[in-house]
Amino acid sequence: MNLTQSFDLESWSALGLSEIEAALNQWIPVDAPANLSEPMKYAVLGGGKRLRSLLVLGAFDAGIHDQDLNERGWRREAAMRAACAIELIHAYSLVHDDMPCMDNDVLRRGKPTVHVQFGEATALLTGDTLQALAFEVLTPENTLIPADLQLKLCSLIARAAGHNGMAGGQAIDLASVGKRLNEAELSHMHNLKTGALLEASVIAGALCAGVSEHALEKLKIFGSALGLAFQVVDDILDVTADSAVLGKTAGKDANTDKPTYVSLMGLDAAKHKADVLLVQANQALFDSNLSNSDALVAIALKIVNRRY
Amino acid sequence: MNLTQSFDLESWSALGLSEIEAALNQWIPVDAPANLSEPMKYAVLGGGKRLRSLLVLGAFDAGIHDQDLNERGWRREAAMRAACAIELIHAYSLVHDDMPCMDNDVLRRGKPTVHVQFGEATALLTGDTLQALAFEVLTPENTLIPADLQLKLCSLIARAAGHNGMAGGQAIDLASVGKRLNEAELSHMHNLKTGALLEASVIAGALCAGVSEHALEKLKIFGSALGLAFQVVDDILDVTADSAVLGKTAGKDANTDKPTYVSLMGLDAAKHKADVLLVQANQALFDSNLSNSDALVAIALKIVNRRY
Image 1 (cartoon, each protein chain N blue to C red):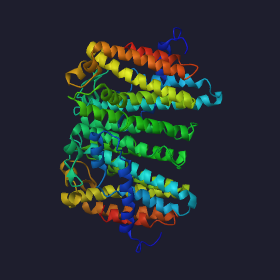
Image 2: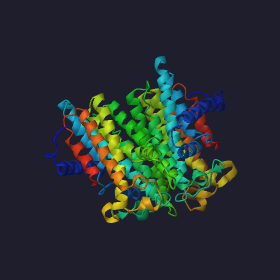
Image 3: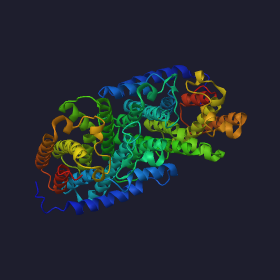
C-alpha cells in the first residue's frame, strides 16, 4: 500500500468530479420532452458528493497503470460511462425513495425533492427514465470500447440495481419497519440496499482498468467492506448530525422506527464497527497488489471519518 | 409475401407463448425478497396477450430460415431473452402507469392492479425491479450468445424504454392532458409511448435471427406502422368496447380529456387510418424479401381487426 500523506484527495476529487459533471450534463438528453429533461437535470446535476463516481475513478486509477498506453483512451471513456451510469441509477433511486408512498421526504441536498418541485407523476417518470438512461449511457453507438467490456458493465450494474441489489435491499427495508432485525439481517439488507451499488462502483472501475482476476477479487472485498462501513456511518450521522449538515432530514430513521446499527448495537459499538470495516477494506486493498491505490485509501478513510 | 390462409396463428401463438411463459417464470427470481418476488410474478405472469413477445418471435421466424443450423440454438435463446426482457419492461410500465399519481387505475387484465393488491410503495419498487431485471435477462453469465448481439439488444431496449421511447411518450402524454394536439403531435406521442417498444420487438427478433441490413430497415417500417396502428385501434376500442372485453376500465381516456385519434378525427376516419397503416405494414414486409413472414402478416391483421 502506498503512503497517503502526500496524496491530495481534494484536488484529485475536484478534477474527477468536473469531468463527471460535464459528462452527465452531456448525456442527459436535450431531445427529451421538456417536462422530463428539466426534472432529470434537477435530480442528477449540481449536487451530491458523487461518492460512487469517485470509487469508479479511484479503482480505475488503481489498476490502469499496468495497461497499454494505446488502450487508455477507451478504458477511460468506459470508466466515465460506468461512473455516470451508476450516478444515474443512484439518482433515480433517490427520486423514487423520496416519493410520498416511500419515505415522503421533502428535502434532498438542501433542495425540494423532485416530487415536491415537479409533482408525483413526473417524479415517477423521471426515475424510470433515469434508470433506462443508465443503460443507454453504457451502450454508446460509436465507440472503441470493446463489446465484451460494455456488456460486463451492463450486467454488473443491472444486477447491482435489481432484485439482488439495491431494489432488493429497499424491499427488505420496507418489510422491516417496526421489526427487530438482528445484526446479520441488518447487514444483509444494507449489503443489498447501499452496498451493492458502492461495490459495483469499485468493480466497474477495476473492469475498465483491466485488472487481474486476483485484484478484482480483492477489490470486491474492499468494496463490500466499504459499502457496509458507509451505511454504519450513515446510521451514526442520522443520530449525531443535524439536517443542515446532512442536507436531508436528520433523525428520520430513528423517528420512523427503522432498524439501524445505532439502535441495534449502540453508538460506541457502531463507531467501532466502522473502524473495523476500514481495517478490512485496507487489508483487501493491500492484498490486491495494485500499484496506485492512493485514491481508494483516501476515500475509505474519509468515509469512516464521517465526511461523505 | 406468403399466403396466410393456411397459417394457423392460434397454434403458432400458443406454442410460442407457452415457451415465453415458462421462460418468464424461470427468470423471475426466486432469491428476491418475498415482498418483491410475489408482486413481480403477479405483474408479469398469467395475463396479457403478449403481443410484444409474439412480434419478437414472428420477426425471428421471418428471418431465421436463412441461418446456419449450428447457430439456431443461441439465436433462439437470444430471441427468448429479448422477448422476455421486453415483456418485463412492458409489465413495469403498466405497474407504474396504474399508480394513483398516474392513471389511478384499479383494474388490469381483470385483476386488481399491483398497488391495489400490494400497496403503493411495493408497486413502485416492483416496477423499478422489473426494469432492472430486463437488463439482467439480456446479459446472462454463461451463454453462447455473442457479446455484440447481447449488447445490441441492451442498447435497443434501453432506448425503446427511455426518454426517446416509452418513457418520453409517457411524459408527452402527461403534459398533453386537456390540450388540443394535432395529428402529427398525437402520432409523435404514440410513436414514443407505445410504438417504440412494439417496433423494438420486431427489430429485436430480426437482430436475433441475423437478417440483412435491407430486411432490418424494412422491418423497422413494418414495426413503426404496426405500433401506430395498435394505438389507433386502442383508441377505437376505448370508445366502442366495454370494460369486461378490455380487461381494463373503458372510456378512461375520453373521460380524462386525453387526446385520442377518435376525439381528433372521428371514429370512421380512425378506422380508415388503421386500415391504411396495415397496408403500409404489409408492403414493408413484402419489400423485406424475408422467406417466412406468415406470423407477422397474421399478427398485423389481427391487430387491425381489433382482436389484440
